[in-house]
Image 1 (cartoon, chains in turn green, yellow):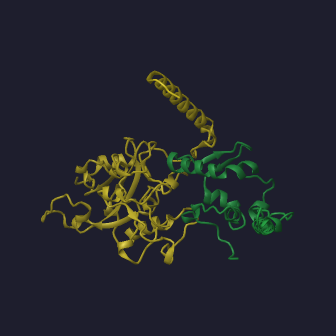
Image 2: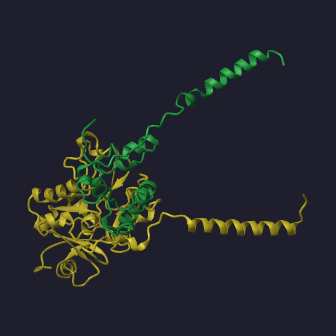
Image 3: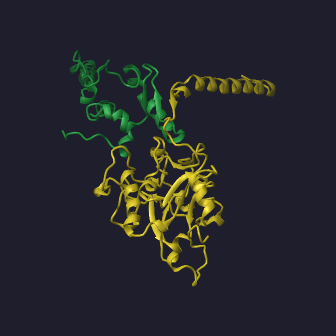
Amino acid sequence: MYNSGKIIAGLAVFFILATLPFLLNLGKANAKIEPSIDTPEINAMPKKHCVESKEFMRAEHMQLLNDWRDEVVRNGNRIYTSNSNGNQFAISLQNTCMKCHSNKKDFCDKCHNYMAVKPYCWGCHIAPKEDKS
Amino acid sequence: MSMNRRQFLKLATVSTILGAGSATAINSLSRGNLEASQVSPDPKALKAKRWGFVVDVSKLTTDEDYQKCIDACHNIHNVPSHKEPRHEVKWIWKDTYEHTFPNVAEDKIMNRELQEKNFLLFCNHCANPACVRVCPTQATFKRKSDGLVMQDMHRCIGCRFCMAACPFGARSFNYVDPRKDNAIKVENKEFPTRMIGVVEKCTACYERLAIGEQPKCAEESNGAIVFGDLEDPNSEVRKLIAEKYTIRRKPELGTQPGIYYVIGGGEHA
């Protein structure tokens, strides 16, 4: 092979440059996304619970909100009975979800920004007032 | 590989059946739909076969009486008031006799008082609504349970066909962002606003009916607006319609509007 020294050196340099971002972050923990549930309303609850289990909400809240929307707007059903704890909730993003999760910036936005998703809930629904930070 | 016509048709048939079958199977397995047992209406909700209104403007004497109804509605529904008249958004408003009933022929010797009166106008919640027929996304739809003409803001694409179709001008388009320039004077935190590019209108306070309250305008009107079930012969609206002479706006168009305007008192009618 002609110029093998140069080619191999070049390949090595290319390989190091291309994998540099991965090599630099090797072994470092990724910034963990922890949506905060530290609000006065949630802290005041004797037993902390959401409408469904934490795992369900984490995975399915978008589907649940879609179904809630259709039930209220199109079918006029406004009471939701929880599968996991049997409690009844008024179906409302503004008046149920955000009454407890009054920290939109540290709860909703945290994951949504990380995942670069922009749900357009807040174009119409009024988010709770928070300190600008 | 060569194939005769018979083999080709066999293969095509089998693969079509398999394809359609597996699509159905996948759809039925997909999760996400709420079980019907999990959702229910509020037991306090007001129920009717078909909601309707009787409006008696003789009970509204001053401009403030009209404005009280209009402001009460617009405040609880976060309806913006824009400075630019072209951008106006209205759910309930007042207009003159001849604008309200343009189809009634002009008559010089008719009751002058009536002719000079303003009328309160809002969505008629027609039995046969033109807006619903033209909506391409079913964003506006007629609620089967009580006949209200509803507007699903999540689905509205802002095509404005419904505005062209509505013979009563009951619909407004958000040409500008309603949250800009402090257009929403009093913000009701319990109710959403709208966004730029959707059509909005009176929803007969469906959010209040759902928790057992009357529409806001009826509550604020000192009895000028009466709300009730048009299909129930014993309801207050039906009694008023039976007792007094009432007319509806543009009935000849066949949309069957649900607002009855009282013309003249009971004794003379």
